[in-house]
Amino acid sequence: MERSRFASSPVGALVPIAGTDGRGERYEHVAFAAHPLSRPPTLTTSTWNRVSRANRALGRLQQGSLLVINPGLLRQPTLRREAQSTSALEGTYAPLEDVLAADVMQGSDRSAALNEVLNYVTAAEDGFRWVQQQRPITSGLLCDLHQTLVRDTSADTAEAGRIRRIQVVIGSRGGRVTDARFIPMPGGSQLEAGVQDLMTWMQSDDPDVDPIVATAMAHYQFETLHPFNDGNGRIGRLLIVLQLVGLGVLSEGLLSVSPWFEARRDQYQDLLADVSATGDWNAWVSFFANGIEASANDSAERIRLLLELQTQYHETLRENGARGAVRDISDVLIGRPYVNIPTLRDSTGLTYQAVSNAVRKLVELGILEQRNVPGVMAFRAPAVVDIISAPSAA
Image 1 (cartoon, rainbow, N blue to C red):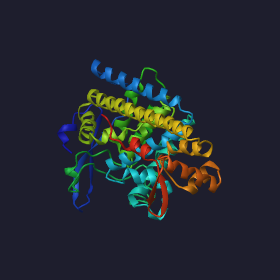
Image 2: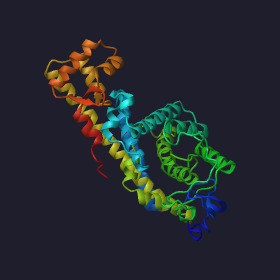
Image 3: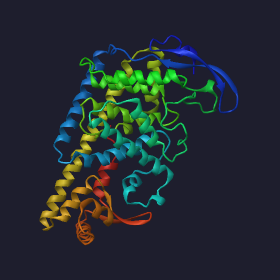
């Protein structure tokens, strides 16, 4: 980390650090300790315009979700797409089709990468339940989410679910601390206090703080603090959506942000570092608002297409005299495009025979197709998968 770049930062200070790096070499260097967040920054008219567009896009997404009888059903494909992308951004890759099919797989047939992606799904669901109960986001919640995220992975150590107590570095290919792109503040009590300051700041109900600006600032602060030994990127991007739900901007976690940031990884990282170096929030907030706008528009369009597909299913079933269990199961497919007979029986309460007959009819009509996944025979709704897995437009 270049000392000179961060030496005069108005939003943090350099603190001395010393120790032994991953190569066994002693080092003496500096880390960046972010100051607590304060009032919102001054932004240009252009950036405020982008913030306004982001707010309008979130409003359209929220309005669309209110038209859905069961918005929680649509959260599943959005969440799984986000889980796959946010994990890929951190180097853990599982194909999206595997993530969508995971519920019908035998646990022993899931790869380690897939299990790690599914950990994110579980952590996110826990987080959404928490904020939808109007409970404040706390450091305790973040620690619980982190523990779930790293369960049964190489990061599942005694430090899982704890604010880190060791020094970490970001972007050091050779393992040397002095070569790192960025070095966050040391672990321990000062870091714990920094996280608590952030949680307190996020709970402020100041009406003068725009939710997009507040979320951009909180995301910067979380990533700059880097409070965990591992998983900070995934927890930080999840925190974006949790904060927007907690602020009442969204009622459901139907926003997927990681695909947009994943496509702009270098710019994302550079702009975060630029805030630390200069204290100028404008470029970061503008970039972040662009990402929220594009992500909200993308999520809203996928939801529109899924609901349109559901209507098409209903029309096809009506034309062919299919109703009852067949229609009930077709509605499930919008949120769960991979199914099998046992999972449908358990989720619908129908008999095994009724489910089998309904699935057979859906296959005849081309709504489902048989697909073998590891360890089990399953059925796939190809039109649903196509909508979920289509590349983002922006």
